[in-house]
Image (cartoon, rainbow, N blue to C red; front, side):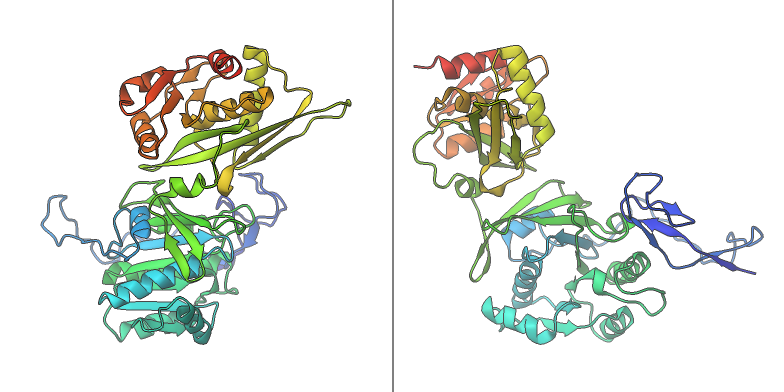
Length: 455
């Protein structure tokens, strides 16, 4: 006879515990264990090796229908997806509240509907009238998409079963969905996993491209069980700061395209507008070269983006502990870079406060930004501006060496296209810079001499 047994799922790492405890034993995170639906434990005599349906195997070269991508009508959205929506794919999109996830998906759904594709938009957070108000504000009220406000997965799948499978199905959001076959309130681990499984199965069986909107936790990760990200084909993050107009759609996982590809949008009064040249957006307002400012050619997927790195050094008169403040970059990497500048180049930052900012609210993770950050710090310390119309890139080692980085030619071509005349970086990139004056920086000491002793 089957018996039930309680279990608890860690929302951070997905590990299973058989009793509640404050700290997860696997990932050491606190207060992440959530009770799951009671699991049924069967006797060892229960055999699953018979009674099922035979599985059909096919060869890799078996003939079949080629899946054609469907464009969304938003070039930046298609770029992040790898070329458009793949029939039968499940996409999970996460982002902070109010960042514009629903607006972006409503715009994409409306464009597909206007192009002749059947589109279904199911909202579990807003009433149908609220969604219509947003559509009217965006100028999409005439789009022939099908809109519904529902939270029951049984009702949604029953309704979809009475009609032709749509080209796009949007579920906003998966945390509001509820299944009457699973115990627990909407948003719990068991409900999110069970509802997502049923919806994904419908999408796979009927060749429907489906987008699930997911809530995020305070640390930016998608709420719910970690297994949800493994179940879907594409995981996307919609990022941005509310104080800035730009938004970045980033592909964190993509079974049908490149990972880390991005699409850039700008929030305007009439919704999200595509930004074809994001470098101009992040470099806007730069007139004259100032001390403490360096331009870094970042790379997002296959797209180069020019970013301004700003540094400020404030000397302390008293014996107070100097402060280190970083916005848009890793604070630990800044501490390492300051240590290398002090140890290898003889500069003194120990008695000064250091402030570092990536302009436009952009977040840098590329290690090639080391040289640009070092250039901004040295420029701010010496109060001398860097050479006009110059870009800086390269990874800095603990020995003070400037190491090569990937895709130097893409970075330099983007800089030359935007009118930059000089480039500074590792030695291997010199052959890839025919359109601008490129100068090697082999050691951080060479950077200090170039900035401090420039004419």
